[in-house]
Every structure is written in C-alpha cells, then in structure tokens.
Amino acid sequence: MPKKKASDENATVTLIDNRTGKSWEQPLLTGTMGPDVIDVRRLYAETGLFTFDPGYTSTASCESTITFIDGENGILLHRGYPIEQLAANSDYLEVCYLLLNGELPEPEQKREFVEGITYHTMLHEKLNHFFSGFRRDSHPMAIMCGVVGALSAFYHDSLDIGSPDYRRLAIYRLIAKMPTVAAYAYKYALGQPFMYPRNDLDFAENFLHMMFSNPCEDYQVSPTLARAMDRVLILHADHEQNASTSTVRLAGSSQANPFACIAAGIASLWGPSHGGANEAVLNMLKEIGNKDRVPEYIKRAKDKEDSFRLMGFGHRVYKNYDPRAAILRESCHEVLGELGVDNEPLLELAMELERIALEDEYFVDKKLFPNVDFYSGIIYQAMGIPVSMFTVIFAVARTAGWIAQWNEMIQEPVQKIGRPRQLFTGPTRRDYRRG
Ligand code: SDX
Image (cartoon, rainbow, N blue to C red; front, side, top):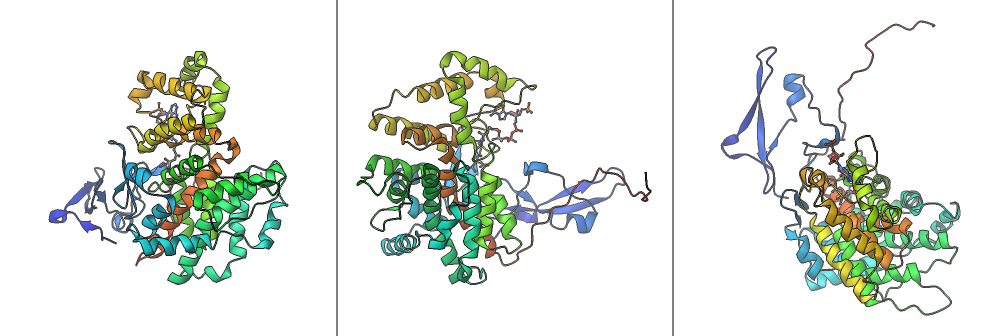
C-alpha cells in the first residue's frame, strides 16, 4: 500500500485561536491524487479542540488505495482503471479481483478466483430455513440483512479475521453467496422453490438463473440480459467511502466478523438517500406518470417546505455528471432496444425529466445531475426484476467493494476502533430531585 506522505517541504497549516492568541501547527499529508489532508490525529491532545463535521463533508476517514473519485470532473477509478474502460472490457468477477488484489488478474489467477467463487455459491441447507421465518411480503432487503448476518452463525471457520487464509475464505463466501441469498429472497416472496446455483454458469448468468428459472421447465439465460446484469454489477461494485462502506469500516474497526460488517453495510445501503434511491426513482417515475406532470414535480423538488426530492439526482461528491449514470443511460438504450421495448414510457419519461431538470437553474446551480440510481431501475424493470429487488442487486454488487475496503482496513498496520466525539449542547450538570 503506497504510504501517505507528508507534503513536500513538510508543509503544515497553522491554527490560531483568536480568543487566546494560541497557535498550533498541523501537518499536511499528500496522496497520489485528490485533495491534501490536514492530519488532525494529534489535534485534541495538543489543543483540547475537536473538529466538527457532521456528514463528513470535509473529512477523510481513512487512507485507501482502492477507488478514487473526482467529483468536479466526473471521474471514477478502481485501482487506477477508469470505470468506463472496466464497464466496456471487464467483467464483474475480474473487477472483484482487481478491487481485492490491486491488479487485474493473469488468466490463471482469474481462473482460480472464478473457480473459488463458483464453489462457494451454495448456502448451508439449514440456512434455507431462515427464510421461512419471514412474512411472505417482507422486503427482500430485510431478509438480506437477517440472512447475511446469520452467515456468521454458520461459518465459524472464517471468523478468525487475523488469518489471511480465513479472511480470503470469508471474502469468497460473501461475494459468492450474496446472489444466492438475493435470489432466494425473491423466490420466497413468490412462493416458488429456491433454485440452486449452477457451476456451469458465470456469475451474472447464475444470478439470473436463480432468479427466473423454476423446476418445471428449462430456462435459457439471455446473453443480453446476462451482459447487462454483469455491467450493472461492475458499475455498483465500489465507490470510495460512501455511507454503507463507511458503516462496514466502522463496524469492522471493532474487529467484528466480516459477515456482521457486511450485514451492517446492507442496512445502511437500504436508505432511500443511498442505495434505496433506485427503488425510489422507479416509484417516483410511476407517480409522475407522464411528461406533462414533470414541471409539477420539479417545482416540488425546489420547494423547501416540501420534503420531496428528485430521487436519482444529486450526489455528495459528484458535482458533475456521475460517470456511472452516463454508462447506464447508454446501457438503457442498448438493453431496451435489444429487448424490443425501447419505447418504454418510463425511459422516455426519465429522459424528459433529466432534460428539464438539467435546464432548470435550481438543479444547475446546485449541481444536481443524475446519479447511478437514476437509470439502473429502468434497466432492472426491463429485465423483469421487481422494484423491491433493485437495492438488493445494488447490495450484491457492492459486496465486492465493502469487503475489499474491510480487508484493506483489517490489514492496516495500526488499527484503531472508530470512535468519533461530539459537540455537546445538552444540559450541564444538575442534581437529582424528585419533581
Ligand atoms: C448513492 O456516496 C456515494 O458514493 C453514494 C453512491 C454510491 O455508489 O455509494 O453514489 C450511491 O447513494 C447515490 C445517491 C442516491 N440518492 C438519491 O438519489 C436521493 C436524492 N438525492 C439527495 O438525497 C442528495 O442529493 C444526496 C443525499 C444524494 C446528497 O446529499 P448531500 O450531498 O448531503 O447534499 P444536500 O442534501 O446537502 O443537498 C444540497 C442542496 C440542498 O439544498 P440547500 O439546503 O442547499 O438549499 O441540494 C438540494 C438540497 O435540498 N438537493 C436536492 C436534491 N439533492 C440535493 N434537491 C432536490 N432533489 C434532490 N435530489
């Protein structure tokens, strides 16, 4: 891992408290790309002061070598490779290998990795009984949270996070079993039997097989859908220190086992401000219904008194186009065209919504562009995937990034439990007295 280094000439920033005239030097650290950081690890010890940054808008929570985002220029790199090139030339398991190991695999390395994942796709048979404890109408993300957390009850042999071999086994199991858990959650909701994974199919084909085949007839996985699913998985694989990844890192900082950490990440991703947005986008498009009503919803999105937000727009980091949205927009046309539904009204409505929003000064001024969630749901819908499964697919894909970031953290030479402080504005000390 390239080590962070002090800036050239050991640059520092000077902090001055104008109430006392006291000043302190804080070192500046420089990475390979992106903003320099003020190293405040000694700040409290030296000054008795905390920093204050709810939402971490200006805070680097860790050092990482995995994913780089340039929000101003709409750039996303995984281990230095542009997302556009990976989406066009790679496949999801190869991207998983890249995120985990830092380099693209040689052919033999890839074969071994794919084989390792393939032979861990089945669930322990007793785990299948967990699903029957849920109501049939349970949201599949609730099932994912429960079942993935329960994996730690089955795989004691991969809870020794200090052992690289055990970590690798846990990593393989998580990447391999997420599609199986996801597909079983879908089948359970339908009241259909679980379809076991097949070792003769690739990752995306296997997921579609487990989702859509049944024991009563042969199911041929469409190469078009499989390629589209694989590309969608690549686009959602990792994204720096987003809310769910930060949740996984914080859970992992207490040395919690990787299955529990990933379950925490799933819970965070579920929120409509984060991974739940793709489901919210489709529900929003269906509520808008037709192009004539778009101005009404744009008006609502701008109204501070109205909690409505244009789902699929805006991003904490991208203040330009989300490069993933651009690729998904292109995929939308390809997939819908190949499926013969390229006049899909929802796609036309989405394109009109995007056009109007990007002409509106409110969205332009606030740099609210479509994000990864704006188009993904339309592709899923065209593939016959129900809205409730949209965020589940995001979780399947993001498991690669979550576990790669967790693995990077676990290997840090100096690990500290994440324990933020606060700005306390509550009551000062007072003595108890009965009212
Ligand atoms: C993902 O972090 C990641 O990398 C996430 C992700 C990943 O791959 O992990 O990229 C995946 O989560 C994408 C985002 C999906 N969420 C949505 O599409 C939900 C709608 N978007 C918003 O909730 C919002 O844009 C966020 C949560 C995505 C970002 O919020 P920020 O950065 O905290 O920005 P903000 O809430 O402070 O908004 C800034 C201003 C506000 O107006 P003012 O208070 O300055 O007047 O922009 C406005 C907001 O009201 N605004 C919106 C808006 N998003 C922000 N107004 C209308 N519609 C929106 N969608």
